[in-house]
Image (cartoon, rainbow, N blue to C red):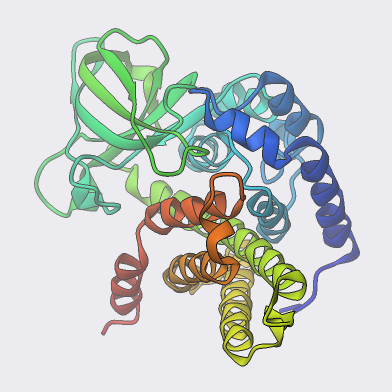
Length: 379
């Protein structure tokens, strides 16, 4: 395992940081918060031009064929900028589901267009029970004469209102292990019986939707992968998306730390900068420890995913369990050390705090992943 980043990865970091400083400043983020779309066509096209929408897709499907450590570098920079838009949902949920489970024809049809920015997609997994495991899948898919009929409700679906196609996890077989009866389906925008409703969210940079399926009829070709074989590829998708989200959280936490330490140098109280006071130093040191530990766990998880080692699932859950708490604590401490100005709408700290809270529960919170770690090591 190489504990350093390559020259190419550092170049990617520098390029991405400059890009987001120019194209995704705070004013841009705040404008997107006020809109349902959460992204502009021009910005999405620029991401595609950089090759980032297909960063981890194979070259034969329009991607650049880079690894998950490279993606980690990019996601950190996206987190620093609190980048809005459907990158996570399109590239790392819907797109990876197609890559992991799809046939050669399905990959050819969709991945090239995702990488080019032509289409957007997402994954509909969670339901009103808010579970991230196979037992939480209760939406049904019944085989019919000419295909499939889907019924049920999905909740907290990222960017479903923007998706040209939604990858829906549905139960095709009852009984037995929950993992054995899950299948994946490609549900196109505008399908009869499909209703998508935007939900109010704390983090206005990340849009969530309710997806209702009422007798949605799909052709047989809409099945993504094998019948009853959807959970194994879906678990791999969640593992990879979780690591990517951890990297985004690390980037946001690092930015909060930098903003806070800079403020502590210039904010004067009782004749000297507040950073000179021991209580402030202690809090800043705790923030640094949280950020560095989160990075270490995330980088290891990214390497494990890249190398496809057996402990990749364990590493992903360890990273998410720690980083979920770390980002929330760092963002909260940043607001406290800024004092009154940290609570204002005009200051950017609340953008990071809200992103920390939404990311904390995306793909399962710290409690969920600690339980998963315990299961994986047979405790």
